[in-house]
Image (cartoon, rainbow, N blue to C red; front, side, top):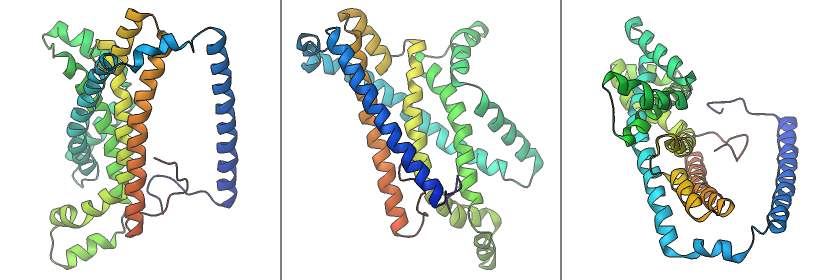
Length: 275
């Protein structure tokens, strides 16, 4: 059984395959039309692409990619343990722990990350809390992502059979010991593909750094486009960078999922493209 969604039956899988094929054909058609329009308007002129074959240009872009990966790494390092603690709090038997954890998850999961970025940028400095630019991006993304990760961790814990806890208790483990030594290791293996998906989402969310003029990929792309006036070429290269990074993470997620499935820790997904 999959942790986060109901697996479709034969009819559902056939519909998914048909929808995927139609979407692929539509995508090809849109790509062909876009290339035709670019050619008609001179955007495929080799002279306009030549700058992106030089090292100084890529060095500048890679500086932006470094900013993106730094922000995403900090968000994940902070949001992962916070999300796990929130999930444990949400499952606590004590109301005074469960209620604040539930409130945090509900609030920060529904409030748009962009709104929190605006608060960090415009509202909090009025009250003396003016963080460095990097942290104006990292803090709101951490609040938002930790709430989403809490849901993933909670689903992983609840997916385990109740007998796991009972077996641990029969061995003399206390509830806290059973959670840390028996339940959590299994739950984390169950949700590993979803955690990779959350990583991909975090990388994309760092594009909100554009609002703060933080030196991530989008901001660097905007500066380049303003300098050389090659908007189409610049933003296509920026899109290519995002594609390579997120595609690599997605492939990593699928590899981990297959490896866990081989050893029997994760059930086969209904759709191989879930990550």
